[in-house]
Length: 181
Image (cartoon, rainbow, N blue to C red; front, side, top):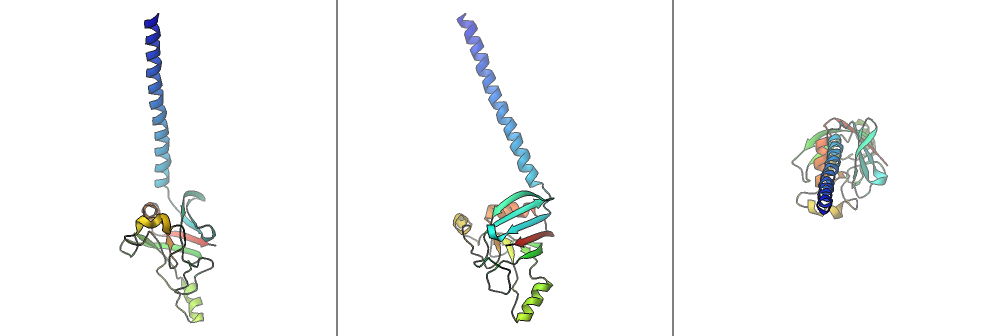
């Protein structure tokens, strides 16, 4: 009787280990599918909400990825001139990638457009330019846990370095970007 009990107990323990391993594998496969789907998503719009310090990577109207971002020190309102520390508002295009800037990787926003140039010219000022989605200042990426808590750029949109790596992988040149308050 004792031998039969021990044999049954060993079978149950063995089954418990297998079931635990199978459950782990099931969750691992689900996690892998979720991550791989977001990495292979076809991002068709980058949407930025300045009032919430959020950037959303969109595919067919669905949010695929969300980031907390930092802006210029004076984020409310549309960029009107060079040096106003504002991030432009409106529809633009992410038109080229830059790997050799003062910041860890960057993608250029097509600001200023013709309307921005005309508006600045009427006021007799420069509209500014070189507005980017970028990582942290070179050599200071380790400080992103602090810098991403406040608006510190001159009008760009900042991510942590690991986030800009992911962003550059997921977003193709030519993707539209909508920036709103």
